[in-house]
Length: 270
Image 1 (cartoon, rainbow, N blue to C red):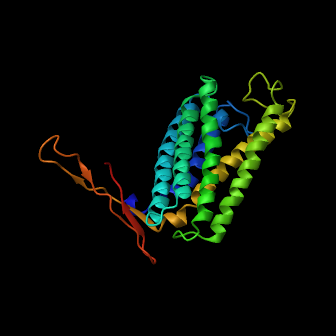
Image 2: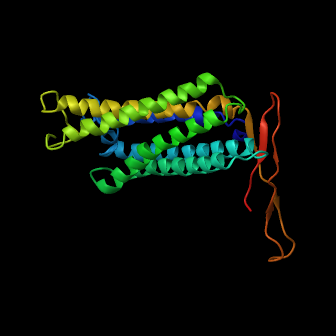
Image 3: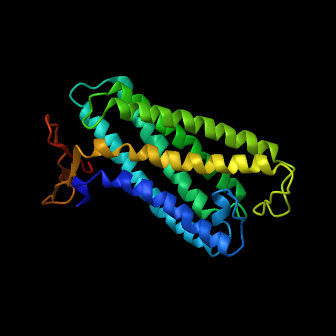
């Protein structure tokens, strides 16, 4: 069961998302809907049939990402339960909210193509990239504040910080380069060719987007070593004899362990 293999969630994301982008890229290029030279990721999922595949693949990825963000939230909450620190608790909750919004944005990008509902598409892109970046920054902060969490290491923390810095550079490069192309786009904005004015700026923007997407997946993959030390126990449901006498009771026993064994917690509804 995945409950004791939580490290598979970040591994799934780091493989699944890039492969999904490559699949829709190949379909879009094969149908001559985009030029092979680095279109925007969204351009590879704008027209059918690739738009159908793009939406479905991103929806699946968004659901898995939401589950992983929640697992990370519970991991940190469980680890510091005995000696809670208010700032860590608040940052942990803020990171969860940012992560969920980011995953929701991924779904919006996949379901609302730029040629159909461009405003919603752009909002989704802001959620996915903007709030996704904030999520990574908050998690990096938590990593340095909780250096002794099982599975953590100095190299892991420094690596997360480096990825965050690169992500900031790429998102700024993306926006600045894209701004230079305004008013210079061809009649078909998905058909940029080298002879187009500001083609270099367009290429800089699109490459920055792809690199940022892959780096974000790589960042999430860094949760793998820490997730190996935790497992989620199935909730236990207690049925009531008479309706209305008492609510369904779910066990919520948290039993942190020390040493090499996994830290276990059970979580359910209340």
